[in-house]
Image (cartoon, rainbow, N blue to C red):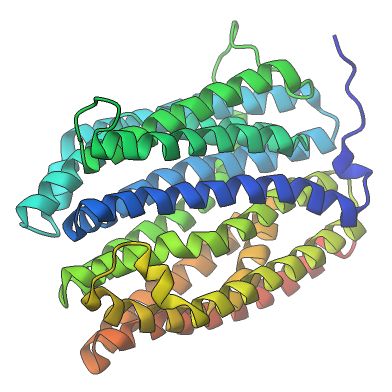
Length: 450
């Protein structure tokens, strides 16, 4: 049996450790963003209604991602602390119980998707094309979402031991398979029937299952710090409780994004269905900016968690400062691109003149908020790594439910469609202010004296 070596998260200089962990994740997430965009680009070639149907299904997809990633954040944070404490038996137990709750989460969404896809889409529209396409798409991506849930968990188990190159391979496998299959299934290439929106859904779930298979295989062969053995597995409620102490606030926090998207779609569709398409396209495009930032914070969480377990205040602060610097640089670049080239970005999605007239001001207004959002995301990740995910939850609830949606509703009444987009800037400024206040309090309570 291979001997466990000292984890690099406790020894390697932060200036080398964070970039070396973050860049593979950033690359894989950029590929992830690429396949999200390619998916919608191909769907937009079918029709604008097809693009709208996928956009309306996005809140449910976002909710699945929230549960899968939130659960994985809980696994990640608890696992990194157990490894920092050199408690390897407890670390194995955390990983095994994490996989157990991951499978249960998938089962809940599979039942929901099978029973409620048509009802969900009918809450937005009675347009026959949008309703049929959206129902098919949502049914497929929920019922067959086991690949999504398991691939995310397997990637996080690799990440927590510093094996981010292997995490990148797993994540990129799913994305590349999806990109290849999209046009084949959507347009009926290679002798297959043209499936339209349903084809995009099948390409997505097959890609996710491929990523899952690669993640399981790499963990089995390469990950010697966390050893999974389900022969005598029994649920350990102490481990499950520890996972959800961090993971549940993260799940709720990210699920709030689904509530926000649902609410914004209801506000926007009152103007025109094209506004919903613009909002969906914005989320695809902004992923190119936000995904690299999430790559940084995905690397930050285990570093902070490990060094909190190892009682190293200096390394926690160094990692946080470097994350803020890298994140701000990425967000500033994203803002410039959205300000300079909103038209060409929208034209990737076969944008009509109406879509351009709505989308160009939308992208320019929303992108002003990017740098504020980046700082808030970094602090939120630190809170999660230290076991204070509730602070992240409060930030997210204030930003999206107490400010963004009410502001969007009021601005829609007072200033029309263009005014709605300013709600993002108002919400992000408030969120980053709250994040700074929370971090100062947490620093004095948990970090300064260790």
